[in-house]
Image (cartoon, rainbow, N blue to C red; front, side, top):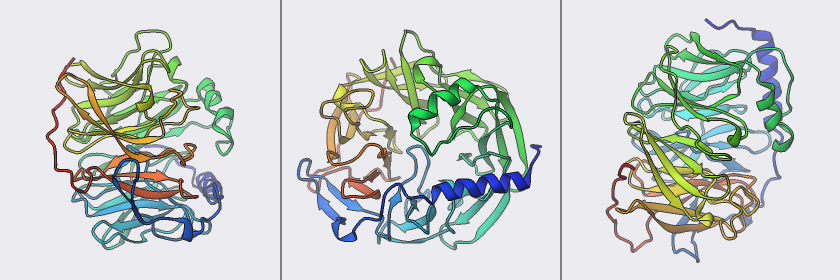
Length: 410
């Protein structure tokens, strides 16, 4: 069991909530926000999903926001006074309504139970998307997080940082704290929470910055995590079993300044996909490491096609990318687009532009995510003046479905 400190835990959580309630930007004039349009440069339909007061954001790219059936989706309202309140959207009607109280941190939807798991004031909760019934699961460790739920929805997993050592103000610009956290090497632990009992169990400890926890979508006891920090200084992508066994590095860097990151699971749990650059900022790939064979697929990408995040459809046949600004690692000259990528038999990707993001400020990362049926891609956008949640249709109105080729091994 992990030792708890409820008083300190509540204080830390309350401070985090206060920081979260400081808006990144003011409320947008709703008259400037478009609801439905066709992108004039691509012909694809775009809709605004967050038709609620103030600013909103979709979930992080590897955090599931949908029920297994795809009929409902959760997003975060970040408006002042209701900061970090979860909303549930009924996909067929586009009607959204509040789901939780304000002050939520994290969030991931279980595909089986139709519940969203999150933390609030140092405690883990689950709320049903249909009934809104909320269950208190249990207190988290001090500085603990709710990062991911496993495939059979019996466990949550997260990290916590051990007390002591330097503190860092993450409300400041990233450049002021990112490298410093990596260099501090404060001991962190991976832990699980039993959803039925609320009991927590620490199973791995390391003097390193551990991040991006993601349970396998197929194996309820297999967890992916990363060593966070400057990507060119570390081997990032790891898996481990929740009993602490089987620690494995999934991609070993082979040359100076090589970077690999923003990893995510394939829907069948057989592969881990990631952004690969060999070296950093020069040659770009969407790469996938096969867990069983240890082999990799590497799809080359042009500089302007590089994306902050990539994602894959549930059937594994299509990929999406959210593009990037010219001041990012690829230094693209025309990279502010949402992309659709389709694997080809010659192990390349056929790229199609979906949304012109020319007016989007990439300080807010779009974080593309396919709907379960593969017909839409959800993303964040501020091109109309404030952060909102949007979706773009994968196919143009008159475009028929095309057959995609499954990736082959390299």
